[in-house]
Length: 265
Image 1 (cartoon, rainbow, N blue to C red):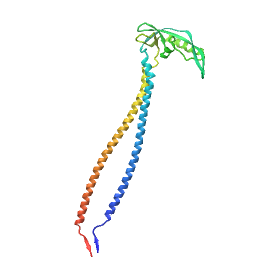
Image 2 (image 1 turned 90 degrees about the vertical axis):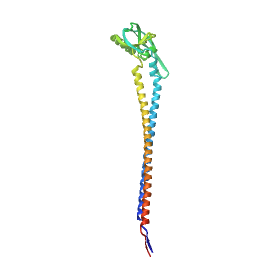
Image 3 (image 1 turned 120 degrees about the vertical axis):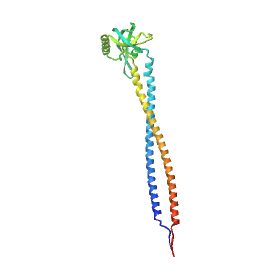
């Protein structure tokens, strides 16, 4: 007796197709994991770079605030005006000491240049100093050169400065608006330009580090959002395929049940 109720070839081909699909899907998942791992490492490096830039900028702010900004804020010579040079003369020689090696100091002398100027705005006469350092080192002298062994070279430097001041006559100087100081400055050690330039680059570093971290976080958020949308789409597609598969299986079952069966004895 022979019985034919259908063929099994289509079932085997469907199983082979499902096996190939599963292999391709496994390869896609593996490649996706490798890509995600590489992206994760790049994001970690970017965040580390941003944090390093922020930390560096904070350290620079701390250093600048106790040096440049503090010196600028503590200075009382804030108002700029025009001055007329009245007198520029070397009045004395001041003792100084210079290093000649480890724990070795020798004495020398430098000329003391006194310069008196008259403020064109008020007519008051003041002693002129080169900057805040010269004022703190020796308020009687306009410029305090670095102490050297050769006294002649220091004298030549100071004499050259004196001649230039006499030739210019009119110079810009900084004075104390409250008139508590009896001296004026030719230049400020840290002016507005120096403070601006010293704070500009740390600010750029801080903003750059913050932008890097913000961009990485935004990329991560968009990646998670895209993954959620893709997951919802895959879930809907899977439900649609499951419903289609059930309808197709029901249709095949109805066709088989309605088809005649040939039985041979």
